[in-house]
Length: 371
Image (tube, rainbow, N blue to C red; front, side, top):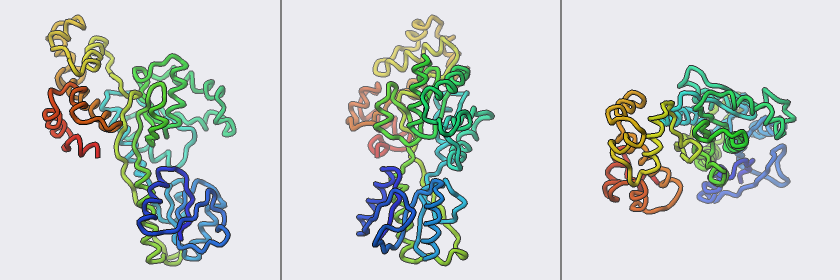
């Protein structure tokens, strides 16, 4: 019998999947401060988030040598085994995504600041000499964090003052949606002025915004499954007394980026090159030739070639392929469209050509990449 303190549905799905495989009986409690009446359990999965009563109850379980596994890192001072997302790697993945779309100005936004936020931020900020860090709890009273008018009052001038184009990473998708709503209210274009990236990939939330939100996929279902598996191993071989323990931490890698419109930006400052890129991006299935594109943007072909080389370090055809592959990845991730439809929508001459090009670029066929 295992007791669970759940927090996020995807994480809970992973726990349930492992429990069914092993024939576990689960007892669920949203707030673990004492054992449920009649509970005679073998282990506990918890999400410690600063609740003193819960941490004291966990200590009592450990004294009774009942294994406990934490699925968060909000309270690293509590010495118990953990299975957590690789927070720092998630920040690095976000940084890489912003770099790939050409952004040089970046910021972080979160409502609060904890040890987990610090790990995300450290991974994200390592790539740049400066990251604008905006934490709402440092700007308004903690009792007013949900106040809409106060949020607008303190955040509007900060968003307006940010250099453009700018990329903002938020701690989760809810905070990304909050920043998006304010940007649109202020007339700030997303993604052209500010690109927004969340963490968590809540597909319902991300896909049902005025501008669908890109997000880091943190694979919380696997997080829950691996935590249950670790607890299973501990229950088979009960941990030693508290003073003799050496706690284990398992990091679950993130799965990458679910790229949607909120980061589908053309982060270049030259207006001629920007116009050329817009033309390419909006005509992937039937793009202009280099000569036609030069005519559309009002420069010679030699000038256009020079702009691509100096500003982007690439050719027009390389950028066209990058756009096509990016759209193909988004279609592969967000739906079940057949390969031939994706090939046609992205401008590849046929499905076979698309498969070959995709495999050269990613090391996987589209079907395997889709998973």
